[in-house]
Image 1 (cartoon, rainbow, N blue to C red):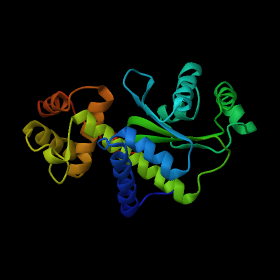
Image 2: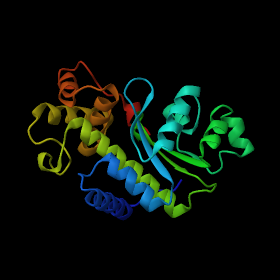
Image 3: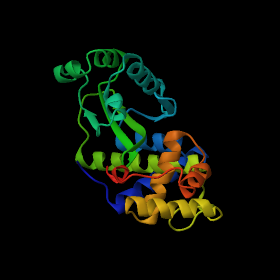
Image 4: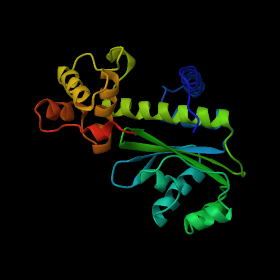
Length: 241
């Protein structure tokens, strides 16, 4: 599987910022999805999160993205569902191919009928904590080339960061270089405890703390207080991808 470099991550971040400026909006997951369509040569993008036991659309660039998500939830199968159940990226170059039809016998025919030809579902996760899925789709059959796949993974990483920042209600003026809130000692203390429990650096430990708060839909400060009071702890297997 291709991996993005720091320079590609920075480039993709600039693309998202440029798209947000074009739209006249702050940088957000919505601007990210629009930038993904503009830069990756895909027909549409949809970002789903799990806040109620089922994937819910956080943003979609068009009605087809919403329809593809609805179909997968309705029939209980599909590339994004596979990712939600703990799988890695699901890269489907041809939804009408016999292998795709056999793997998702209910979803694939309906997706093709709806107008999708290929679908690429990328997990948004921190260790074992699954936060969301970024799905990219095309109206034409075809694989993602190596460069496009690398950039797609960078978009997924930045989508994860934006979701976690939104959940924690963070902005750049309120955080340290490691991304920790400036004015919440419980969060700082809890991050240190999670770092010790998972044998991670502070930045990675804070990402785990935020991801757990997002997955459980609880305030970051409340989860941090529980960690500090030793009502909650993080297990080492959560540190494994």
